[in-house]
Every structure is written in C-alpha cells, then in structure tokens.
Image (cartoon, rainbow, N blue to C red; front, side, top):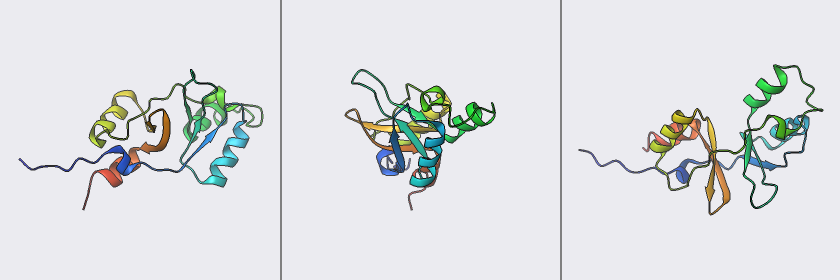
Length: 133
C-alpha cells in the first residue's frame, strides 16, 4: 500500500475573492467581479450572530439574467446563497471533494477561527490537489 501525501484545503485554496455587503446591487457586484478579477464574492456578516453568504456568477446568470431582472434594481442579498457551507483549512482535499459532491457545491469559503482565509473550488482541488509532482 502506497503512502499518499495528505493535501489539505489550505494548500490549494485561492485568495481571489472579495467581501461585499448584501445591500449592494448586482450591477455593482458585476463591476467588482470585473475590477477585482475574483472567482467569488463573499457576503459579509451583518452582525456576530449572522452567517456568511456567497454570490457566484452562476447565481447572477440564473436569478437575474435568465429572469430578465434589471441588475441595477436587484440587491445581492436577493440572489446570494446564505448560509454558505464553509470548509476547514486542515481538511483533506479528498473529503472536500466529497463534501462538494454530497451537497452540490462548486465553491466554498475556507474558515479558520471564524475568519475567511480563502476560497476553494473544484478547479483548485483538481488542478492543485490531485497531482503533487
């Protein structure tokens, strides 16, 4: 039996995300996506007992564009996913992939002690986590 090196989420996570307020419009969110060149927008907590949210481009495509809603009149909180499932930076990427499959996720924030460290998605898991040479 070969000894497999454990690759952890923190080894493959990306830092290309931006934190936003749920009250900004989808138009502003799209501008942020373009300007910051990020793969996801995380929606900040409004208070200590709140949870993080996430806004993906697929959410905008399905809930704004496909429904012909004006992006300047729709707020992020109306189309985001909240609460978002977060992963621990120490999680093995194999289990992260299983978690994504089990819950139909494409991307998740990486949380350490309640603070967002990064974001992980299938791209990072496969491209950086599957082959280690």
